[in-house]
Length: 270
Image (cartoon, rainbow, N blue to C red; front, side, top):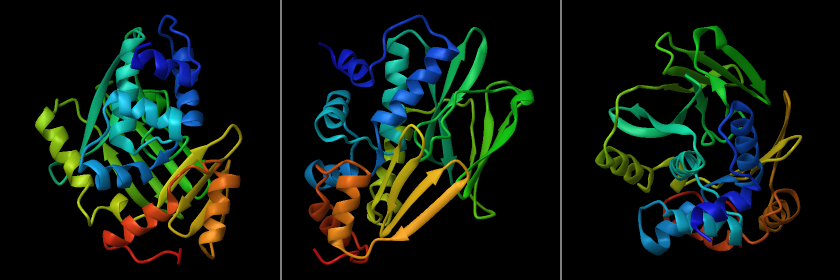
C-alpha cells in the first residue's frame, strides 16, 4: 500500500471524481482526524532539526500517534493528496515581510476556484468559492473570519478577528514561489523565538465543537460560544490530553522541557 493509499484509508475517503461535495467531505474528515498541533514539530526539531516530515513520516505520525502539524505540513500534504485523487489543487503562498509565512490551497473545480486551508487552527477551512459575490463573515467562538474574494477569481483576503481586534490578515497572491522560498519560510518557523517553538498548542475539531490547549489555557468552541479555563498543574494538563482531547500518547513531559529549553517560561512543574 502506498503512502497515498494509507492517507486515504486514514481519512476513510474513497477515490471518486472530483466535486465540491467530495472536497467538502475530504476537508471535514481531515479536520476530524488530524489535529493542528506543534508538539510533533518541537519533537522533530529536537530529533532531526528544522524540517517538516516527508509524506511517509506525516502519514505514520497520524496513524501511530495522532499527530498532525501546523500550516506548512498540513496544507502541503493535503494539496498532494487532493491532486493524487484527481483534483486540480495548488499551493498558495502568503508572505510576511517578504518571507513565505503561510500556505493555503486554491482548488479548481469545473472552472471555479475554491479556497481551502486546514492550517489556521480552526474549522473555518473551506471550500469557499473565490468569487466577489461570495464574500462573507463567520463567527466561531470569540473569533470572526472575514473572507473577501478578489475580482481576479483567484485570490482572496482573510481577516481573523478576536474579541473585536484583528489578529491576522492573509492576502493571497497568484505569484509562484520557489522551493528556496518554501525552505526559507519553513526554517523561519523553527527559530527559537518563533511562536510555535515557545508555545504549547493543540487544536482538535470534533463533530459538534472544537477543543484546544494554548499554553495553560483549555478552551472549547461550540458555534459562537467560547469557554476557557486555566489548567492549574501538570496532572490536570495530562487529564485534558487524555480525556478531553483524547490524545493520551503525546509526550507532554518531554515537550514541556523542550519548550523551556527554547526559552519559554516553565508552564508546569512535572
